[in-house]
Amino acid sequence: MEKILIVDDEVRMRQLLKLYLEPVGYACSMASDGEEALDKVKKETFDLILLDVMMPLFDGFEVCKKIADTYPDLPIIMITALDDAESIVKGLDAGAADYVTKPFNGDVLLARVRSVLRRKPKQAILYEGLVFDEANELILLNGKAVDFTPKAHALMRLFLQHPGRLFNRLELYEFVWSYTSESDPRTVDSHIKMIREKLRALDYPIDQHLKTFWGRGYRWNETDEDANV
Image 1 (tube, helix red, strand yellow):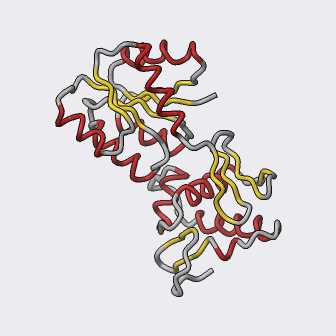
Image 2 (cartoon, helix red, strand yellow):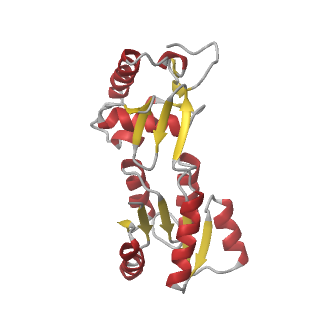
């Protein structure tokens, strides 16, 4: 079942969208503002986001850009009363896959949801037999699921979705653990060690792909000489 995050500060609009989506087989989650939406995206996996523009804390354009920059494969449909050409262009430039103006026809909205989801890749073969099965939220090695702990799985998912990006320890901790001042980002290091040990035991050349940059962070598929396993 595909999961959709509905982001709107109006309760009635969230409920209306849910009434359209759930009867045709979509699972829905709700967020009432941009901050809650960003937090949910860090903690959960979604197939699509329906995003309002005019909200407190962060407007939809800012939220869209933040999500698109970090999760480029997560499609966003902006749903807003702003129907001027400048706003539409701004939304699409921020990374939205589509832009729907209020008021909208429910059947048209569902058609656009289906269209965007059809364009979303469901599985990507990544490196030497390692596959991230996005549809089922599994990491497979030579066709068999790798039994990672939830946090290790979340770290691997982040690396595999962003090959070539250098993440510092705090960024990884914020994405996976939701950083608080009482927590210790150094736990990232122990989970990276667990990932290495798990994949080495399965004869996967993890050290060729997951690189450590002392004092800087971790990066997937990096080949620079200054990287240290």
